[in-house]
Amino acid sequence: MTEVFLEALPIFLLIFCRVTAFFVVTPIFNHSTVPAIFKIGLGFFISLLVFSMHGSNQAMIIDMQYVLLIVREVLIGIMMGFIVYIFFVTMQTAGGIIDMQIGFSMANIVDPVSGVTVPLLGNFKYLLMLLMFLMMNGHHYLLIGLMDSYLYMPIENQWFSRMADGSLAQFMTDAIISSLVIGVQVALPLLAAMFITDVGLGFLAKTAPQFNVFVIGFPIKIMLGVFLLFLLMPGMAYIFEKIFSIMFHTLEQMFGIVQGPPA
Image 1 (tube, rainbow, N blue to C red):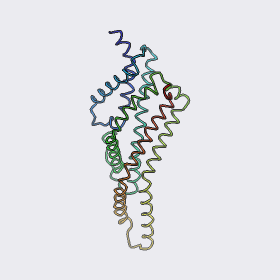
Image 2 (cartoon, helix red, strand yellow; image 1 turned 90 degrees about the horizontal axis):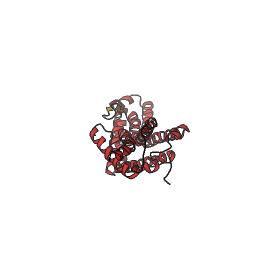
Image 3 (cartoon, rainbow, N blue to C red; image 1 turned 90 degrees about the vertical axis):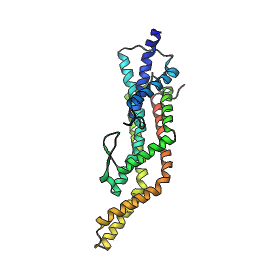
Image 4 (spheres, rainbow, N blue to C red; image 1 turned 60 degrees about the horizontal axis):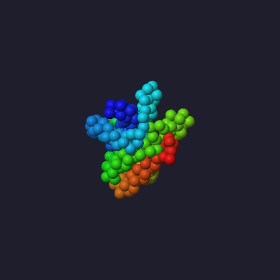
């Protein structure tokens, strides 16, 4: 029994490293209000499930090369979680752009997760996206994707070779650019409305100089921005659905770059 345990322990620890690293970065699971004991326990039981399906027939010796394997599994978990994170941050990016145009950028709030100031509307949209993700059982799909990652990226994968040839660096660059583009696209309708408002205020300043556009411009832009925000709110569900679809597709692309589909 002791020999079986010692043979299974190295494989289980590698699985546990990937799972816990994923939870450290991924939204929902990385929230400061989620107890650390819950994250460790959830990671432990998921690692047991993954080990029973993909690791029970493998064996490994703990040596100096084993340290590199631990580093590789941690990097895989962090990168998977980071991909999910950057697509959630698109809402904060869009909200930050909108806040700057409306005038809410002076009222930033502190994010309890990261400990830094975030835009007001960006945090609102981020929490709304998080709520929609939970309503759609997206966290279940994340866990399924984490477990299925061992089909595409088993413990013996080609991570370091993909780092050496630049495939992963190019992939991460494309993913970050894609998330930024999505954030700008989400903010584009309100950006266009604020631009038209600025043009109108500019004409007003030229035709009626007695009006102080700096005094009347702020409340007009705030009221118009909030009105358009609530007017566009029903369409946010469709936007969130598209972002989630792109996010999971990006994860699949990462699986394919590292190892490819199972034989």
